[in-house]
Length: 336
Image 1 (cartoon, rainbow, N blue to C red):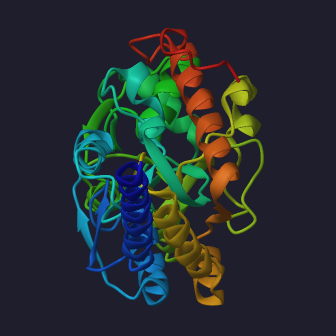
Image 2 (cartoon, rainbow, N blue to C red):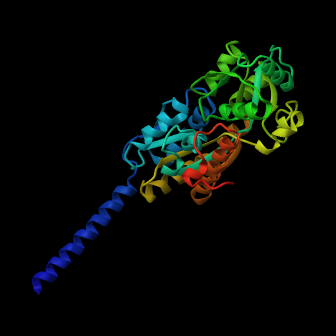
Image 3 (cartoon, one colour):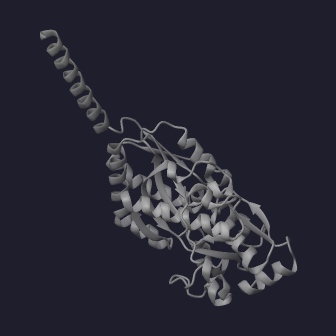
């Protein structure tokens, strides 16, 4: 009897010791620098937004976040890489909206359902831009020329499932146009190619295009929304030009920070607190405003609901536009 009690007490003591040690280990997170994997190439909106918020979050973590660009396959290379790392909070994914559509587009069996959102930073309206000296003075001229010359008008895009692909797919369905789509590893490289005259146009988030528009290096043909942008009131909303686009707008690219699902809650909470404080920093809010980015700052349940809602919206949008390979119903994605 005494032996049984002694064994029970020893087991209890060991259990308490492990709990205490586990708590200490989590409390000490991070014990080393953290890796941050960016889905897109240098100079694009995801890259710029990620590199601006990270230094503001580091002081609250006490360690550096080493950012690395892993572009390719519409962000799937970076997403798969992070998914294959341990769920220990030492590999963060800095991503955009693209994984929301991976399953219906046949790109990957992994999507944001396999990740925990730390923060949804913001969203940016999409504009179609051309060089300032382009022959296209309006979106209608651009569409009419594309209709008259199927497959000859070159547009820059960032791969299947990227916002430029979504917008151009909807143009194909609604306006009956066929583009010569040239792929780039991010909006930054795509806009550089546009400025160099290698492509004719690009549907782009306003954030990476804003400075070029202000400098009169680019011309905006339309905003993919029902209303104009306050910062660029001269660019018409697409529904002003073609009302038949109304059912498809607005569609906004968005950006966030994620960890692999299964990461301990204490680590998720610490990362969330650090990035929320960074987001709330007046310097970061000023940065977002200058880049015409809609600040969201969603965390916890709100972030999860946002990601799930966007997955539903984007998946069904691509299915109804005829650009998806598999039905959202196959993956039990509810219709918005």
